Image 1 (spheres, rainbow, N blue to C red):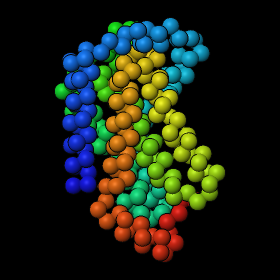
Image 2 (image 1 turned 90 degrees about the horizontal axis):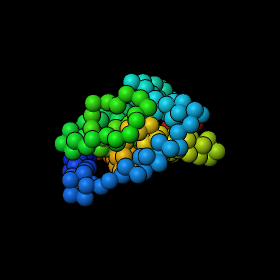
Image 3 (image 1 turned 180 degrees about the vertical axis):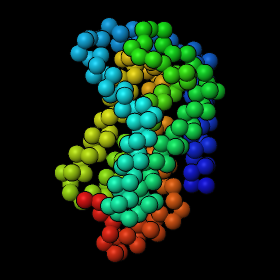
Image 4 (image 1 turned 90 degrees about the vertical axis):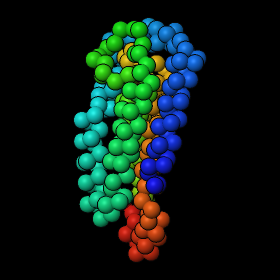
Length: 215
């Protein structure tokens, strides 16, 4: 219930926001998308492509599996290692179903790469990247070294923002699509962080025997 209820509430909120933006307000964000087209350069194009690639499904799945395996090996805590995997799974479920219901068209500008068959709202790349890397930022709270912990968390929080900007820059999403993706991904990470009913009790046991650090 710690996962299903908040996920269902998130889905309702996403679909409601989508209908509000697309149908009721009929929000026109073309000026912003065209402004991003004007910013395109031979230098920024490959940079945005590299950032966007980080949010591809196969890349994020591989990232989750590798990180989860490393964390499980380091901490011996499978429930802890599963947080980013669960965050990505929740995001995928919310994104795929809500985007089909909302059905927003992609921006009417040149797309710098292939546009997935899913609709534009919310941004799947932004949501998935946010879910995984915010989850990793939460896991990083276990790192004892302050410098390392802050560095990891800052990098994990910068990447979703870079992804959001990249997706608008490449003409694949409206601004509100990526904003929704950031919100969805962050919420999914928080749901995953609190997923296990016995997590609080497990945390107390770990703190008691001194096995709770990851660095």
